[in-house]
Image 1 (spheres, rainbow, N blue to C red):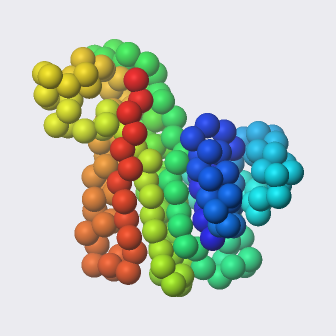
Image 2: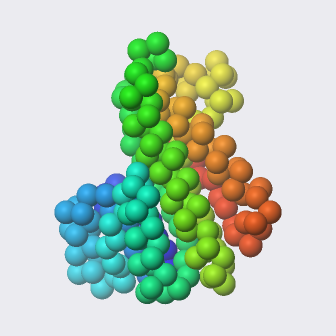
Image 3: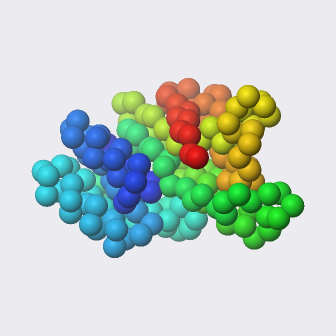
Length: 193
C-alpha cells in the first residue's frame, strides 16, 4: 500500500499509475482535489486500485487527517513517496529573492515533506516492509552547484535550490536515524532544468 503526495498530475501521477499497474493499492495524495478526482477516475476506469486522499503537506491538520485515513483503512503503510513540491521563482538570485519567496518554497519542499515523513513513520514501522522515497533534484547538490563543469553551476534559482539542499540533508538524516533501521530510504535525484 502506497501513499504518494502530489500525485494528481505529472510525475506523481505516473508513479501512481505504474505502481497500481503492478498490483499496489495507491492513495493519490492531492493538493488540488479537482485534479485529484480526475486522476483517480482515469486510473479507476483502467481497473486500477487507487483512492483519493486530500494531502496538503503545508497543513499539519491535513497531514494528520491523511495519516488517520490510511491507518483506519489499512493500519499500516508500505511506501511513502514524497513527491509534492513547488518550483519557486525561476532564475532567482539570492540578492533578488525575498524572505517570503524562501518561506513559501521551504514550506512545501522542506517543512511539508518533513512533516509528512515524520507523521508517516509509525505506519511505516507497522508494515512488513517500509520504504520512503523522496523525490528531489540535482539542483539541491552542493557538489554539482560548485563544480564549474556541471550544468548546475550555471543555474541559479535560489529558493528552490536551497529547499532541495535542505531536503537532501533531511533524507540522509532519516536514513541514518537508528529508529528508522527497519525502513529502506532511497534518495531519488531528478534533474529539473
